[in-house]
Image (tube, rainbow, N blue to C red):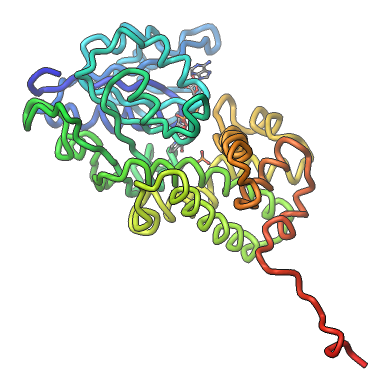
Length: 369
Ligand SMILES: NC(=O)C1=CN([C@@H]2O[C@H](COP(=O)(O)OP(=O)(O)OC[C@H]3O[C@@H](n4cnc5c(N)ncnc54)[C@H](O)[C@@H]3O)[C@@H](O)[C@H]2O)C=CC1
Ligand SMILES: O=C(CO)COP(=O)(O)O
């Protein structure tokens, strides 16, 4: 880590990756004392009608595949080489669908100084030898760099169009914090992400915002199933109520450092659950499955043009972890989503699966005469 101005690289260029890169690049231009103007964005290269996506971004300044119709700042530079894009960076902003993170981190190992600081915008978990891990902890452990998170009620297309929204950034200062002006702190992160249309609150609770962000995608799938069945708003609200309970329980059980207040006080909590269940990709994929009788992978393929509905993978990660702990019965909604997506359980069975009431037993004396 050098003295400011800090150099920033965004790793990822999907729907949210490109949107956050736009936000960051707008702020680096406006704050030259704090940040280097140019922002590298690592792009998983692909050809679009015979042209490289990186070349399209660098010449037409639009990500025509993952964020069409949105003009990008000219100081945002697409780079197809992961290692070249992180060269000299002080701050890494990770923003890829989380199934690709292990491969990316493996490539970065040995090429990133432990003085670099990072923020993960990913929503999901890593389940492996270390049990269930936050993605920020996974990045921190694998690369030996301090890593926080950004999560909120942020449907990318709305943020990209500069419609007002809020978000939460969570970051804990590392034990080798170098001091103001020499290191990343809450003030620097606010300057990096806050825009007039994108209001940032910076807190310490990395676990709370990450758990909420990962698990609301699973709840959104359940919401899409009942909506697709035509059960209406009451059913969707019931799913969100039960889902919120399971999100909080999961946090308290496996990440006791997370704070319950984060779920209702921060954009990353209930607000993100509501927006995702209203108009996110997860709810759309689940509705499509329900209406067209296709599986989740087919629905993703037909609907999302290469984008990812992260709940499809997260429900499996959650199931694997809960099975290891023999606790699947304690999270009936998460388990129902897993069974629907991976074992063809009929969606109509959700109410029975999540029913928390004891079966109503008629006493003999009460039986109608
Ligand atoms: N899109 C949204 O509205 C929001 C997304 N998020 C989260 O941000 C994270 C990133 O999501 P998006 O940017 O929307 O991604 P996306 O869903 O648009 O996925 C497309 C991206 O994946 C990349 N990709 C495809 N194959 C790959 C491979 N083999 N290796 C590496 N990259 C590959 C593509 O190049 C493209 O950049 C996810 O965890 C998501 O949950 C968070 C808030 C909002
Ligand atoms: O995380 C999101 C909104 O905050 C985006 O949700 P989807 O991935 O379901 O679109």
